[in-house]
Image (cartoon, rainbow, N blue to C red; front, side):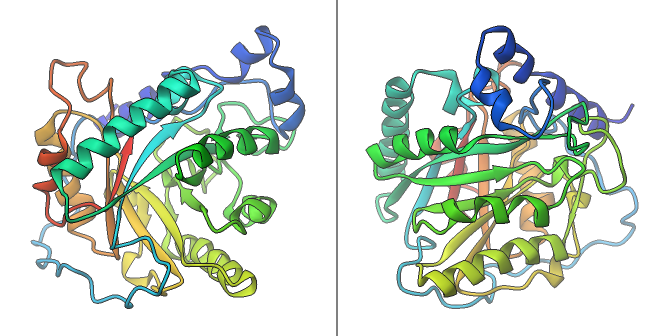
Length: 333
């Protein structure tokens, strides 16, 4: 089994979510989902950077910064750097957002925000919480989509935590065998809020009927454009400040047709490198899959546990600021 497939299986198998909640009596979750009482999809991306075996020729040197639209008033990027805590409060192993009690988690977020402010005083820090709102599953569930939707009460609870810290909220979508067209409209009530933004995860987009976790999934530019267009329409109709769209990536084929991704100042697109491993592997993954394929803005994910479990040290803000281009979205899991 190759490194990419093995890493995907490990990511998927690393955490339990729904089965544990039902055993423990968390009935509200099961009642709210159009899915099965099952397992959750963790985020612990590829340890190794796989070479692009089909690429015989050297790729042209990318141009940074991207020649994109000028930011509109009210845009978060590039005036600020976002520092986000990722996860789901129903499962500790899916990320720091659910690993600690809320007050401890928010206090830790404060410390990370302070560290980034100190490392780059010229760029104000915008705190954020990043909630996995639709979780890929290994079983089809009642909808047959291999995904589980979190209920509105959970989203409201995390939104309330964010408000305590003047943080913005990201809703993260793992579609399983479903589509963004099925998932985004039901979240429009939250996305109409000026401080709620969107993230989409290609790893768990199983376009050819695969079971999530058995293969790394993919989104095409048309999927990214659909999500961006959905946000664009909300910004226009609701007279909102620009939205942010995070797209996760740690392999080349997780996002295809990047040159066809359409840019608009009403939706700021961030390609987020979310692979885990040693600092050298993470730098190389960022170079191969984010730097090499410029879209608009960049992000970088840090794993408190997976990045350090082989004895490596977690990259510091100063380490990450050494990347080119400097990421403007920082995610901690």
